[in-house]
Length: 358
Image 1: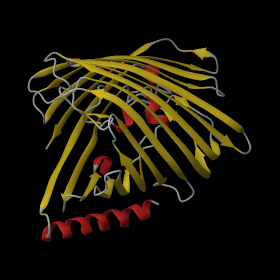
Image 2: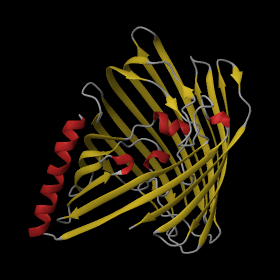
Image 3: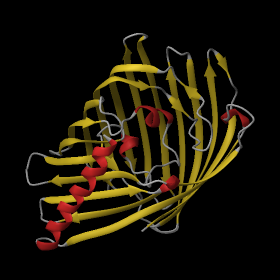
């Protein structure tokens, strides 16, 4: 399906932009770049042969958006980090129906509050372990979505971008009470039923430090099907945000049986300006402020039940927003993990990010 994505994305974008040129000439370009540095102790490494630090261009993305009528629009986004060009978003969307919007192409599946939050707007530098390991990301599919009253709903069929055997049906439902100043209370849940067709599935996750080794390792499974479920809770008032999410999955291997993985996080943030983040259609965006400091905090855990492995992290951070385009983030992380019943004690890591949007 990687080949299909490579052909589908330019085709969708060409249709959108060619129509825009004759009917509704609204075309915008943008992007962002993230430069990261990590420093960490030996706990975050599998052996002493690896370095205790890492510096990367974490993301470098370019995007084009076309709006060629009141009802039709498209988006095309690529990532050019790590010396490769990778297609991220490539879809067209129709908004002409009162009851639903229709999105066709490569897009984020509607699963996970933290996963659906843009990497530019997350509280911490890295998303939580359970989100990175379990929440599905961008895949090719057809999605219907709507926002009647205080509710939002999404339902879609998706084909795994890197596999011809894997597909799934994913849906999300949220309810929120929101005032005119973006103070709100939010509840949500998502489900995904996936057929993996015998593809290999394995948990292989670092402890929320990108440059470190993947210490939380699961069994290699020849997975036939996978059931994902999540619940989410979020509250914002006068700048203070409190967010929690729990995710569970059951994966069936015809030979090994069923494997159960679960985890969650709780995180908070507060900007010293007291300004609220923007909230729309069940998703949280960034703060629009200048020279603002944001304090952040998170605790998370992830458990591999059959393998008797578990990891926990505690992180505090500070974000400095110079303006809407330039931001700096710093996180201090303490982590521990249990492997086959043997628990390693807490140890520390430090992460820094500079990000620029244009």
